[in-house]
Image 1 (cartoon, rainbow, N blue to C red):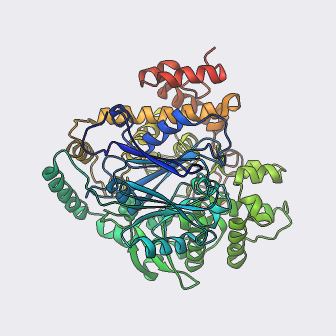
Image 2 (cartoon, protein in one colour):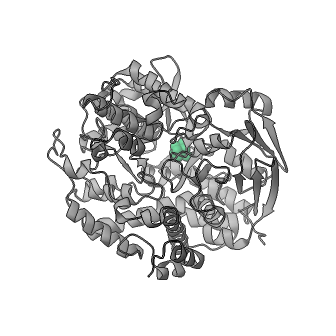
Image 3 (cartoon, rainbow, N blue to C red):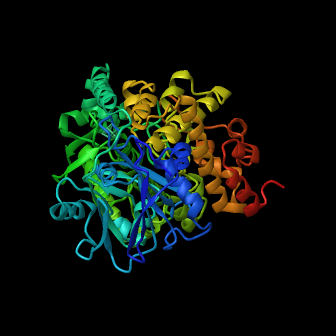
Length: 613
Ligand code: SF4
């Protein structure tokens, strides 16, 4: 039984069908072996989810999980992982949201809230210290995520931490996400839709307890020193001006800016949606709790509303759909956040629809770069009307419906739409997308900036090693600690801080090697989850990026004529598998799973698809 610092040692187990919520103490080994956040989420889903269930069935399990540093006054430490079996990919799905909800959840006494079942009618789960209540949400159902949160704040106070869904989640759009604080969002693989399927409009956390650190004084001093250190970083001032938005210019310069459904890596109007132009119209900064880097760039959109911009939403709702007006991009972004639709997947499916329209494969006219029609299309997606209904299923499914070889340019891996980097000339980034834990996402290994520096042509082992190293650090350690990786990535805030934070928080000596081992355990269990779900449908093709990058070279920019080489990519993938301790199909070997203490996974994989015969 847990009796330690840092972690609260308790989860709240919720059954919506029975309107029951019970606090549960968990074993110390869970914390030590899986840390928190993503680690807790995958362990819970692996242990409790029946394989093969429909992601929208009441049996699916929704996890809100914090890490042992969440809620302490440490730089950028307040992310909440939201996870479930994904309705979009059919595999493991998660995301993180920077939110007061995680702070309040921990103050209320919980490291995680685990939700199963389906409420009979729309509800809000209110967690107030030891009490949990199921409140009627009929007045909130149908409202946008922004409106719902405002109303809930009126009822429960401005300090309440709230995560909720918009109409996209209610209508089971498969890339609906979870929204908080009017613009912070996470859970790309449809975690918001899973909430919707459970009739759960929002979770409200109100906590009055303290977080106890093993060494409170040292923790406080170290936190203060760390915040000061962030402020002294050379790139700090520029970061506050632009956040991730300067990546638009960087991507353009390096021919990786996704343009017109990833057919090109340069966009003729990049400047008009770039970081320097954004600075001229910026009206403020927003950010996550406990962060002094606040990277949400607030601008006024073409509808006169505030919209919070970053690189991904501008690239995907700008260049990828041929739209070169930042005010319009901001309006689409705001609309998407209100509906609770993931902006990356949204820009991807709209780009796909525009290309399908241009090629005459659909009856609807959806011209590149057209604002009004795109805004209406987003509404159609949120309410599942006409073409919007097809797109609401995600790009993999849309291309299956439309057929006629559109799968060659449906830009996804494992059903999750690719995020904002074109990889015609970036094999390591392509490998990163293809082997990411949730489908194509840059979160686990944003290797592109390193790859541009070391050279684009190589498919060598140094690239495989780098992808694995980043996946461990970002996808394993940061996601399980639930701290933001951007101080490290963008400002060079040193990794050495984190074992010290952990020591003062928990009292334990946890080395970087220990953290890497935990990361491997988490990432291998996620892989086992995918394989258990797909069974005999699993193949190494699941780890291959879309055909477009191999078959249709770019025609614009300094790198025109670029495309990936399939034979070299296949060899790179096999090298990745070997280094991971996986077989030639990408399945972890028994020895690998056992070495990580995942004996039950080794047994279950053997039984479920007779893999090791
Ligand atoms: S850097 Fe940005 S994303 Fe990270 S915690 Fe701060 S505001 Fe949130």
